[in-house]
Amino acid sequence: MTLISNAQVMTSATIDKIFDSASDVNGVEFFRNASRDANGQITTMEVYQNLSSDKDNAVLKPARRYLYEYDANGMLTCRTKFVWKKNQWKCVGRYDYSLEAGVYTATYSRWNKKKASFDEPIGQINYTLLPDETVASVAYYNRHHGHSAMRLEWQAPVDLHIVDMNYYITQK
Image 1 (cartoon, rainbow, N blue to C red):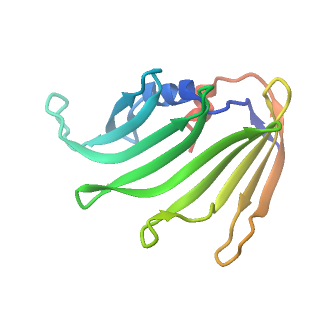
Image 2 (cartoon, one colour):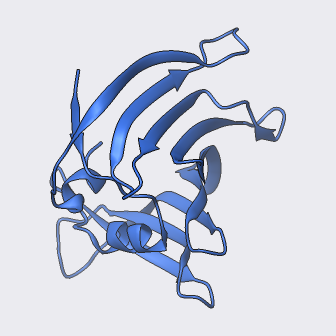
C-alpha cells in the first residue's frame, strides 16, 4: 500500500480553513459559530444542524462542540469533542497532537464518564516528516480492548506530489 498526500501540521490556520469550509453535508445544512482568543485562534467551535427546510426561518439544533488548544507557535495541541445529548453538551473524546523529532503524532482518547477523565489513547497516527515537512510515511496504531500497549495496524510510504489541501481536510 502506498498513500498519496501532502503534509499539513494542524495549526490555527487549519482550524480556520475547516471553519470556513462548506457547511452542507449530504443535503443537511450545518451552521458554525466560533469563539477566538486574543491571537485570533479559534478556541471553541459549535456546530448546529438546521432542522428547517425553509431557508429564511432556520431552526437550529446543537450538534457538536469542539474545544481547541494551541502551543506558543500556533500548532494545535488538543481538540476535545462534545455531542449534544439530553439538552446538554457531553464530552466524547479528545485528539492530542504533537510534533517531535520529525514525527507528527495524533492520538485519540475516549471520555470515561464514570471516572470523569479521559481513558488511555485507543488510536494513534504517526506521520514521519521529511525536512521540507512533506510526509514520508504514515503508521496507524490501535489499542485493542484489554491490552495495555498500542499495536501497529498498518504502515505505508507516501508518494509526494502537490495537491489542494482542502481535499485532504474534508476527507473522513
